[in-house]
Length: 293
Length: 211
Image (cartoon, rainbow over all chains, first blue to last red; front, side, top):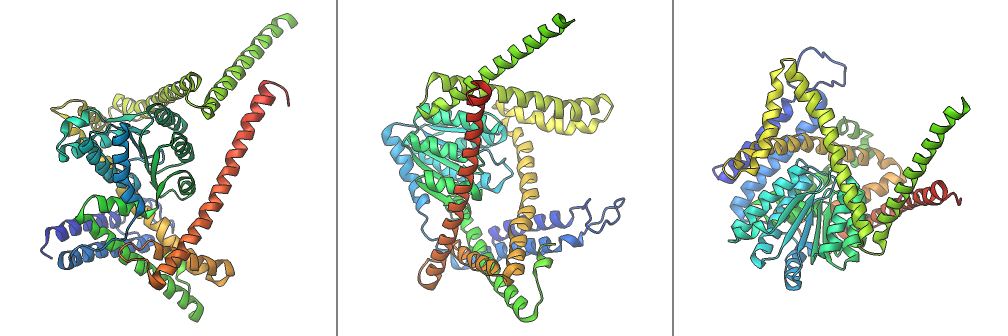
């Protein structure tokens, strides 16, 4: 394994495994000793095995990609609509509005994926000199968004444009945030609204406000209940994992490794489900309690 | 005696009425957004945002800064300096020269958040779901759930085109998802209607006494 990509993946992957295995548990299911720290919690074996499998899949996908090239990723309509939306907003002379929802901080994978999409959108907006507004419920998210926008502008060769973009903290209160974003949509009349991230009860309020203003709306979340509102009120919706795939595709070739690894893991889950059911039906042995420990 | 007790009672009733009136007017101001953006909505919006920021600031000072930083430092526990310095470093981003130091607490926050959430999600969203799908297969419900899980998983494979038998399975998966989305949409709309009824009860009953 000589490639730098493989090295990078394997180092970070083993750090995750070490972190998981060395997590000294304070809540032992068997009521074990609370006065001493143990380095391995047998109750968390399924998690450790699953993490190892994920790590191996990532390393395997990195090697596969190095030898056989990038995988083909099937077409995702919302992904193709992103550049069109930026172009349409530019033609109308209206700003873009991008927000990651009230449901997640920077530790949430969804917020991280949304930041990758933001980087792409900001890059395109910088190229077209289209204003961008990013309201957030979390000061840390707003700061990361500001950095992301600045870097995207520099990559696009328009560092000056970053000063016109606004990444602002509005309110930590759920409906304070929703009211503020609603107001922005109503007053600034953005040409395109991007609702990508972790959303809670404010999802319908924001999607409806965007729909009422007649703007093009692209949404995506892994919050299963809020997806129904996005599907009803938005023009394009990235359903669950599609958001992560969109982020991988937009961040360039290297991230396609993750898409391949994820697909392998899904094949494995399909196989395990079929095998588990066959085992249960034929021998009566149930894998469920082992997996759910 | 009766005179001295009735005066505060009358005053408190008046205060309650004023509170009700202000709450009702703010409710109407927020609902006025249904007509479109207007000064009443704008006032209520700014009030809500300002109050929520003020409230969260007081909450942060009262429940985090005082008990977790100031009190330990006052008692000689200097370990509290670590989060204080990391928190303070966040403000360095305001400086163009020292801004890059703010990336240290940011990296710590993001790394710790991801490290804590990824194994937890693996357990809650993958392993437990698989366990329930396998264990529940003995019933009709379980068999339908198994079919739905298998079909939906095929929809979420991205490195393979959705053609042939695989494509048909993905289409079945999409139908399963649409049934789920329809059900959750109806369920949540019902709960929102309940909230609307609550507000109408407040406006017509508690405030205007017409119910």
